Image (cartoon, rainbow, N blue to C red; front, side, top):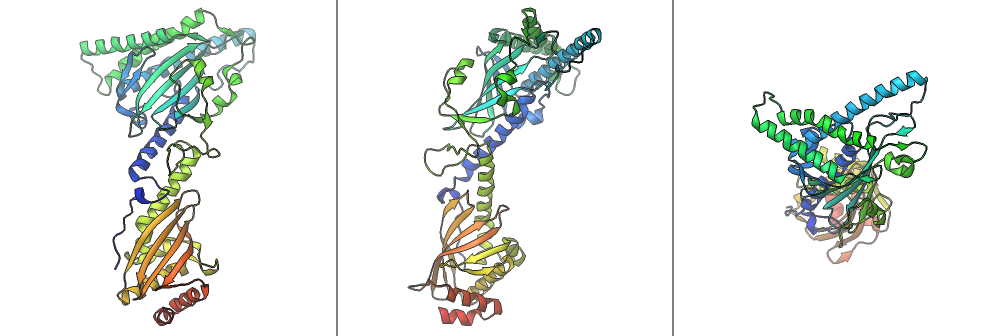
Amino acid sequence: SQQPLNSDPDGIDGLIGIDEFSRLSRTDATLRSLQAQLPSTLAVALTISTASETYVPNCTLVGPSGEVLGDGLEEIVAISTAIVSACNAARGAGRLAETLRSSLLQSQDEEAGNAEGSVACVLAMNASDLSLVRVKWSASLPGGSIGDFRPPQIEGLSDFTLVNGGLVDSHWLRNVTVDGREVNGRVGETLAAMRRAVKTAQSAAQSTTRESPFLQVFAEAAVPLLTEIGEEVLRGGGVAASDSPTSSEEEPDDRAAMPIYVADPLPQSTNLDSWEDIKFTSADMHSMISMLDDPPQVPIPGTDSWNLYAASYNGIMRFIDSFIPLLSGENDDPDALRAAFDPDARLITIDNSTALKGGGRLADFYRSVCSLRLSSGGDFRIVDISNADWRKRLITLRWSSAFPVRVEGTDVFTLAEEGKINQVQQLQLSVGDQNVAESEAVVAFIRAAETGAGGEVAGQIL
């Protein structure tokens, strides 16, 4: 008989609990959504579907002075739509001006418009609990370079707070500058006034638009108001291209990708200058960072290391939940048992000898042992599951059985990348009070089991 197996990973050394793993997996998905969405802020509008991958339904967008700029998914999407609409309009005007200039001057300069709509982002997280994500971002205001002037550079910091489910609860726009000049008040006032005007207009009249009327009205009102910010800066004078390096020259790594860094804790100050004072550590697969003070240590979500951890975790849990019942005979499914083994799987004895090679042969051997035990009325139980190692994809099992005498053993199972059993390493094997330290007895039993004489040989060995 097979005793019930407690597969709760909370009690297994090296594994975090299922609830915690689910939360971190959701956080990982949110971070990857931010990595995909933020660089395209000026070019690709959010939809309700894409926004729900990142934000909770009642999320808020808060301005530099604490003013609410957006409340709920629909308003967040509306702001995104408005920004993209304004940028498209500005880019269209810039292309027209550039075409006229090129025609008049017969210029072949095609530098303007490269990487249009791209926002350079660097992401930093509070490593202790992953509740705060800070993003430094920068971009060229759309419109194209005119003459000797390049587009104004907008730069800022945003804080994203994450709730326990791993989704963004609020986006705080902390600091915004254009060509080094702070425009926090102007940005906040403009977006807040836009939101009030649209909500007032919407409540005063019945909209005939059936699908998200708020989005349509908001977007239509946004274009002139958002464009006004850029025009105001342009009236103050652009930055000569020959006098000031572009953002990509100042921070070449930022535009190539969105690196993830960790700091514990992130400083309270949200001035742009404070970014340089943060003691960052790269959270990539070459620099393991633990988000927990005590074991088990896990990689930071959003990194390549987390991908490896999640794959290993899921493989180990599949082994516990599905493979152990197959190996013990609780689930009598020969095809599934064979599928659980890698084709090149091996059984290694205590003295490091290869006793058996080939996934099919290992599956047949375990099935023969189960048949022998069941025919003799023996039992089987897992004594302990321990020492899960996600890097090496291995798990240690201590088991006990009867043929009818008591047989106990400890085996280390190593999983291949796709999650199948790649190797079984015997660490300890005892029959009654005697330890089996040599491989000859094990090999003899394996050969007998393969020829159908397992019971007779087992009687001699046991």
